[in-house]
Length: 362
Length: 277
Image 1 (cartoon, rainbow over the protein chains, first blue to last red):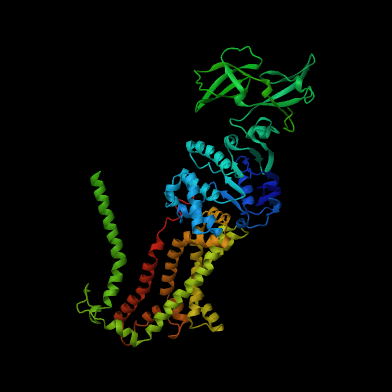
Image 2 (cartoon, rainbow over the protein chains, first blue to last red):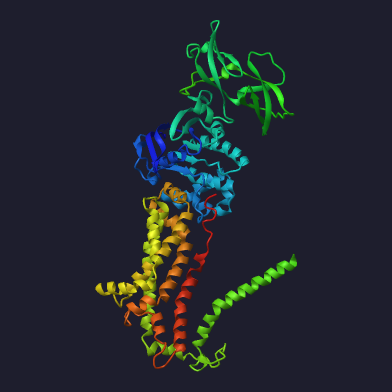
């Protein structure tokens, strides 16, 4: 049982606020991702949880115990650094055994644990090597092994996939997710990549400029973002945002954008007529067709000017009435010259935000 | 292409030979002079191999003057000053490398400015200070002065060494379950050791060979050092006593050579490579 409570934590570096009164509860045996762009304060938060940095204000509780002033060694929290931080003068075996030796385990106990974890991570044949003799992916596994070998309450991972190349990253996502379940570990994973969170996390905490913007189950945060900032940063490619104006006609409420008009009568009580809003629609909720399709969807005409194939999927960039639209389609699509296409979507997927506060209305 | 490679190889060999002759010839001359007779040592043209090698001078220097004391004093001052310089320079470097505090750059610059001072300008004030504290003619005074003179170089060299060692390694070690001091002792210290060894060699060589302070601040066999003794073989009723000077210099090379062979493994760098990608 591990529950980590971060309560009103603030931290400044040379007058610059890095964490601003941040509160967050990490739940037992869940994979929690701290998501935010570079400089959002993720690493500082992890370092404060690990105890290598002291908060200016606020408390950290682990299983109900105030550990704010505890030394790192007394916290039973493990951490994997973005740079892996393997001790260059020790072999892989000694690196992994290091936290166990600190706990005064016997040689045979250490041997057993190191062998077990290195086998399950596929680095057993590397045990006698030095860190400089490892590839990036191997070094990363060693770093993960060094923290997982411990029976820690919480495992912190600071962007452990950032320094790996694309292919290894994909594989490691699967493995990390599996590891979290296999070891029934409580994982806190900081990442600037929305894909990391979407692929692995049970919970996601979205941070920006040292503040927590939203925290909840990953799906909820993705489909019902609190405000336009969360919607924009959490999702790749970024969400399309358009200005809209609410208009009442014949008892129906419409949102008018430069591209389309959407009937939003069913959200009548949340929206007021003759008011400006912003609407957001995720790129993968948009579809492309060369001919007009008669379906119960909203559609508009746009000019496709760039397609970008990623794997077996395509990100299309279109222009219409002065607006730039990004469409993410789950198949390979190569345009031949500029194309005029119909873009359509299900109005259910439309997110409406208040123009002034940025908060989500529907 | 082969031709240009061969010619560049030739240039390389020539350059190496020049450097070797440049550095080794004086040492060779000194060491061989120690075996020559008093006549042969001043003969012109000089002989490269002593005609009638003799060990007399190697024995005589221990009897004609208290060189054994001078020699011991030199070694004591060397060890003492190196300990002092390391004990103060390493913490200074570590502190400046790991902590940001107000005036850090000023502290580092101030430490460096001590090195700008020509020693000759401070030797008289130092003499007066030494007299006041009854430190004239003591090995302790020399150790303190040599140590002080070497703190700047140790601090600056070790500063760059410590900065090169990622702080994450120490943090990670603490998270593994150790104290901050243990992290320093078992991670940072071993990784910085090549630097410490190299800089210690430099400091020791400096302290062992220092002449100016020793010549003015020591007066008797209690504290006088080898370089001062060597200088005293110049002039006087016997003229320049090259053989004795050469013998003492040869003896003076021994401790440095021994230390170098003891620590040469530690001089190998590159241990930090691979720590962080």
